[in-house]
Length: 202
Image (tube, helix red, strand yellow):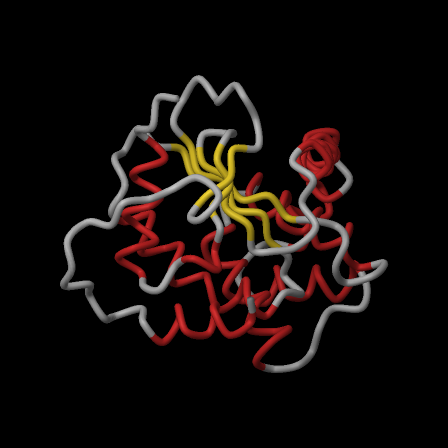
């Protein structure tokens, strides 16, 4: 998986010149539920402590840029990385989302952990990252323990358990199809596979 993800990052700007590939169940994706979501969506399971997730951020962003507007993109942080800080970073993502600051906080947190090598060790450390990136301290304090944020964290855990997520990044399409990341060799193929699964009817 590690080699595959770094290869994906290297291939980010290289377009495919071949015809659209034929995607197959068990090779490019797995069916993990019999019933899909009512609305088309792509969900990424990730952790701020996962270096491969940090590598995948620009790939996911390019995917988002090419999808129809009606497709909902979601991120689901998992708790099983980062030891006691795993749940805390789930809460950090929920706070960032609630305050409409996720777009700037996620890169900042990835940078803090994987580039600066200064992972947060407490909620105060997390709060400092928010404040350093323009979120007022009182806004963070008001949100971090709120019912809304706690509910979001509970939903993250339910999703992780429901889909038996044991490794990240993992990409779920329409609540039914799990992308087999090891089968992907380029950004273009990743985009095509996701679009194929978004329109798949069976």
